[in-house]
Amino acid sequence: MDQIPPIIEIIPKIKGFWCRIAMFSLYGALTYAPSLVGIWIGYFYTIGLGIAFFLFLTLIGGIICSKMRVCSIPFEQREMSYSTMAIVKWYLAKNICLKN
Image (cartoon, rainbow, N blue to C red):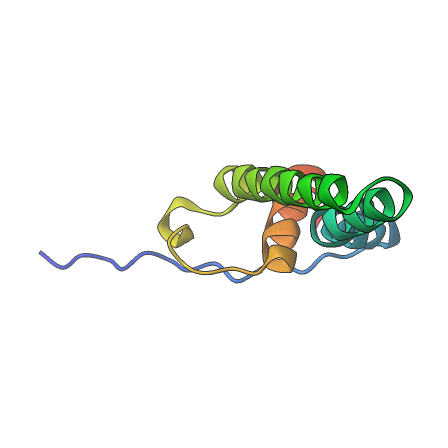
């Protein structure tokens, strides 16, 4: 009996102005927020506290990205490597911007 190979879905395209704004906002928050908050706290308070906030927010961003990956990428494709932008696109296309 021949087995049918799993169907591999491509990364969805995000269409629409507000969905693209959400995509870039979520990507920016996950990627750049830990650095910006760490630099800001390190500048106005102490370097050690800034580094601690940077590490903590990087950990939180990784957990959020992992949860988004699990709830949006198809099961057969979860072992594949995806960038943060690709995970954001999958998440928005499957959960937020359902018209696409």
